[in-house]
Amino acid sequence: MGCRRYGSKPTIAFWMLIAVADVAMLFAAAGSAVMGSFLAALALVAGGVVATRSLTRRGVPATRTVLRRRA
Image (tube, rainbow, N blue to C red; front, top):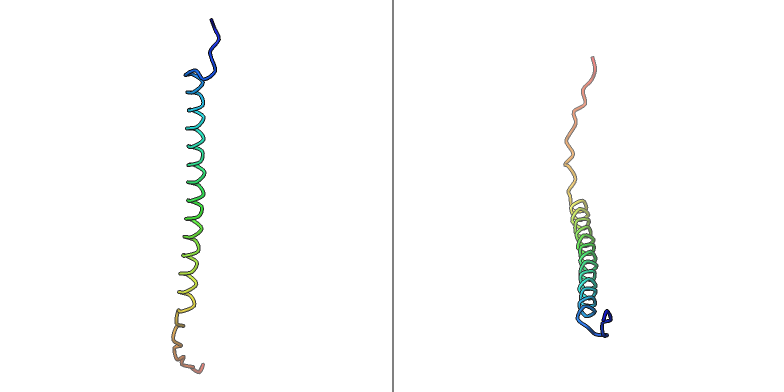
């Protein structure tokens, strides 16, 4: 007959396929979250380095200008 019993192999294979797809989506979501966190941390570190360098930079020493009279 054309009827299959509940719990037959095609049904189990179908749910296993769904489970594998769910795990793949979870890994993809975690991967993007990890990548976003990494990029945010990298931006914070780069901003800290730029801020530190700009705050600790010593000014250019003033050169003595010579005033000349016009003839």
